[in-house]
Image 1: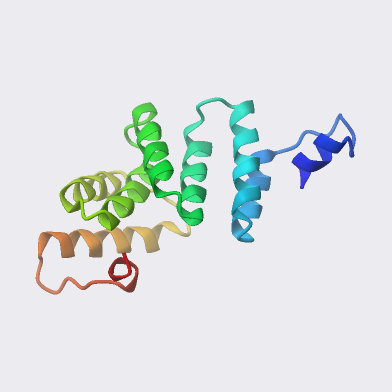
Image 2 (image 1 turned 30 degrees about the horizontal axis):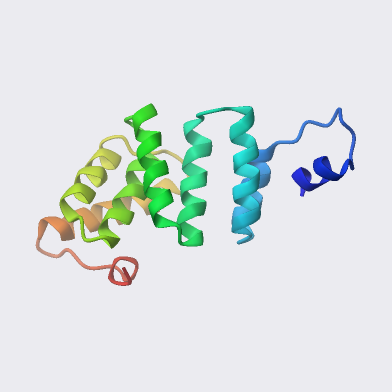
Length: 149
């Protein structure tokens, strides 16, 4: 881990460490606590960065620190009210708490400004299905993800 090398003095000082990318890699590996450390170091380099804060919220969620994740998503939305990822993540945390009305508002905001990219389609479909279920629309189904809350 780059942050550990920096602490113990390994590596060349001229090498710039990309803590954000390191955090993403650690998150993919399931090394959540290490990822959180890297994201926090990235946040020191870019204070208040909504993208880094969203990754911190995702990491908190994976660790089970849902209250911290909720607070972090809300903080992101104060900085950028259109942050699709924060609306999406917060919506599902609110659903876990049974706060369906507020969750639906966040899903609507997410769908009003959906992300683009290769993984976006899956999240958009999931949000649409969840919103349809919350609205009681015919044919709406309950996904495995939502029933495990």
